[in-house]
Length: 213
Picture (tube, rainbow, N blue to C red):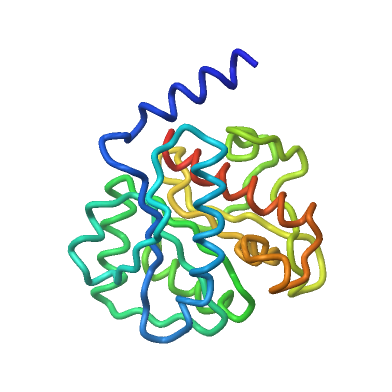
């Protein structure tokens, strides 16, 4: 309990000059917008369950928009292959090297193109599986078995992969789980309550980690 109180105080102070903005990455090649309603639902829960001041309306910015560098949390989602220009890739690299955080969620269909894109952005780094003992799995809620599986897209277990820069997760990639699927209203995907709760909790952990590391 004491640890949780200390964390709440820390999160209320960390990066709290302005409200937390959840930035959805706009890109030309696909349906980046398909998770917008789910994100709004998630942000309401984030505001309700934590002491973070939250802007409950997500922003939509492209990697060519200079306003991107006024924020530090970026969400990438989609069903179709991802295509970014060289300028967009360069700006994403700058954003992440300057302390920004990217949460990428494979909504089925983005995996191959995402892996290629992130290798173009960071040829010197590789996506690495996140160990179950990593702080992102216990920073607020506890996930002793790692990232939960919310939606069945591929056979096999879910995976959380990351690009680590100076021991900090700069890119967190949720593969074969679709965390954002669980943020939608129950009638959208018919996910059971425990799956939706796990998705919300994992999302909160991801945000909390991005604010504190």
